[in-house]
Image 1 (cartoon, rainbow, N blue to C red):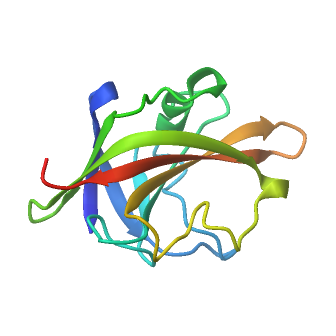
Image 2: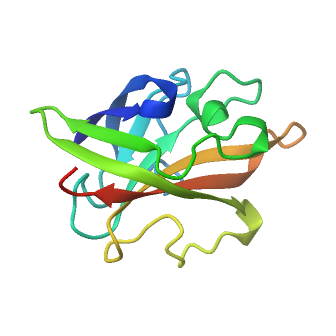
Length: 155
């Protein structure tokens, strides 16, 4: 179970909290007043698993200042292919992932049956999810950005 995440490009070393589903049945996000903390979806694969997507959710703030804003700066990924993301467990366990690509999906186009976010059986990946495209009138986010990173073994 990850308790910290590091993104080498940004020199970040941040807390991870373990959460399940929120009251709407979606993957729970970290507390709203925590701009850099990630929540690990504890109903999916664990960090370092041999298959499936480890899912972290990180906030974006409409006025900036959250890690999600840093990750998708200016509407494009600030992560570059090969950027290292490290997940650390409480007992010193380490799982490393190298960034591959970012994919932005409109909420209205998202298919819950897809493996964009949840996948128990595919290649071992880390998926970081952030909200994007805030709509002031509805006070909702119109899209999500998925940052995919492949697991690195023996490095």
